[in-house]
Length: 455
Image (cartoon, rainbow, N blue to C red; front, side, top):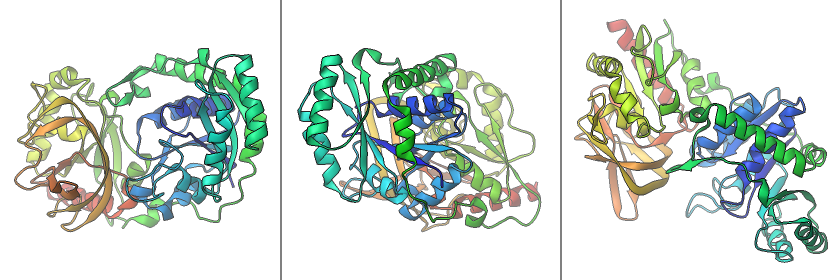
């Protein structure tokens, strides 16, 4: 089994993304094949992991995929790797609100039987660090907190005090100490870090600097030795073909939006479409003026269309092609950014006009897990289908739901409907990891094949 470890922190903002990405880059620089993973639904950190590792960054989200799939998904993603680095989410024990440990870093670490390395922001403490680490190490005996990496250390003297306190009071070894002055520039904006796909040379430089910083500050040999203590996993690797109904007949072509404006996607979603019988063809709405030839269905996932709204609007030829495909009855699925692109306008500029809705940026962040039910049949979901997904956006649509909404879920304020069903179009803010609902890609491929035969 692949050696592995989980990089966690007491809270968000401690520096675990810098440390995790730096570890991946530093180990890869040694010639190791590193498999990068991210706990939770976040799309942005895996982009940096992928740059550092040279292979896809994959999410491990127990809410959307189910706890039973975490180890199989890990084994699938880590196949052929020499070591795996799993970056946690939020604080070590933080998970889905009101659901105990579900979807927490701690739960994933236990499901993977992986040792945990705690990244601690030491900028405003000395001996207290021992009490902090002791508390995290003893909270759940099933979580093996096996190492600490100190971050934002001010000086040699500060490091000495921290190491002495941890040696005396926690028994957890220190694997490294990163200086406060060693911060790497990773620009942020309204939804967190700027995605790696948007930064090109800058992103590559940031990843290289993270790797150099960690290589100079962390005992990589000790990290590898710790990863090799993870016991074997008995779970068979996740297999997309075993999750879907294979198509009997010609393979329909499904166009998958990508590029800088639509960079949020889970690798397994495309793998499920292919396993169900589709030919998946990527395209970039920022640059391609036409859809791929013989497109029989269209999937437009998440991203930052609001950042590229002028360029997307200026590509009138592609907007017209998308509208024409939807009008012809081909299945079209939009998630979050895809919803905005399919509407009439985004921040006052024309979009595809497939849906009778407009969108605009707001100062309010909408974020959280959702448990939703499909309200009517669509090319994506049968009426009554239940799914688990998440929202993550600072935009709003008017209206928020069409005459035939896509989903309904409960909120503290009561039931809520969201999204739009319009003929063959299914669009909403809800992001889905299709490993948790494999009937959806199977259904989409069958609808695409039926439309392909009919034209």
